[in-house]
Length: 396
Image 1: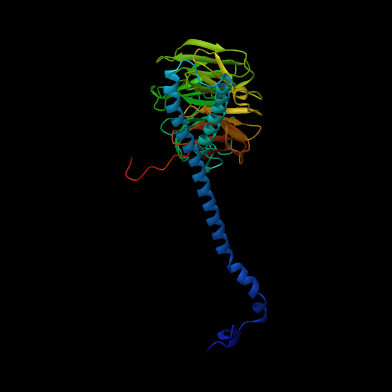
Image 2 (image 1 turned 90 degrees about the vertical axis):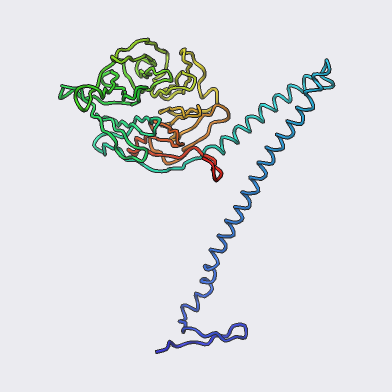
């Protein structure tokens, strides 16, 4: 049977089609409007793309103009200043004014470079706590050069070694050999230059190193040093172990030989609740203070600066700290639930502004990924924070 049809008059033409019910005829207007939405969205996307392209061109043109003008002025000024005793009609006021403007302009250029170089809130994946919900949330984290991550959790007698995608590579129970009840709870974790796992045990006031080369096939933990209340742990660029002593307000550094004997012991006092510690690019270290500041020290244990004074940044409760491959300092703020990057030049850059509940330890990989131990949500959140320019075709 053929469907019944109506004959509709439109613009003097007759259009045949299926019989339309009254409701469908009443909805004809809105249906036509909805059909135009994709085209409207497409136009908005095209307008946005055009505006973005124009802004890119404007930015590159401004930078290029500065480059050309500075080169031309230098090429003119250099021979003139070399061939005459004075400075012509240029006064000290002109020099100081230009110097001040140059500093300001250089800061602006650094900020533009950093804002192009990094990205914000680009969550790649979430890695659940490998111990599950049996213990507390994840807290300590370390990333090796090859990309493996080492994770500790609150009140959990374990150190887990994971791939960058969250697969468990190794699980190390924190138990003293030969003692059934000799478990301990690692607060933070790092890896020595010889590739051995080291942890801070705050409850027992000890620093432990896992020796995989002992007679038991699974290796054993060695207590290398007693410390008042070790909270954070790291390894500096010379291979010395760094320990943040929370209650004593100190950071200890010491060398470790093959016989697991410590030597060359030094301490930095007068810190306010030191929590996490990380090596600095100059051979020193970076330390976060509870509800306070983040301070940078040299290899000779001299204070370089506090980040709040250098950058004019106000912390809530700084927690995990780390330094990426370019020498920038990354800090998690537990109170403000953010992660900021402090570059060597330019203003701080907010890498994570939302989505964190209680950030603790942080670590950066050489592949441009930021690992944040979110204790509040009991998982490790992985962010892409580093933008790498696309390589031209045919290049490695």
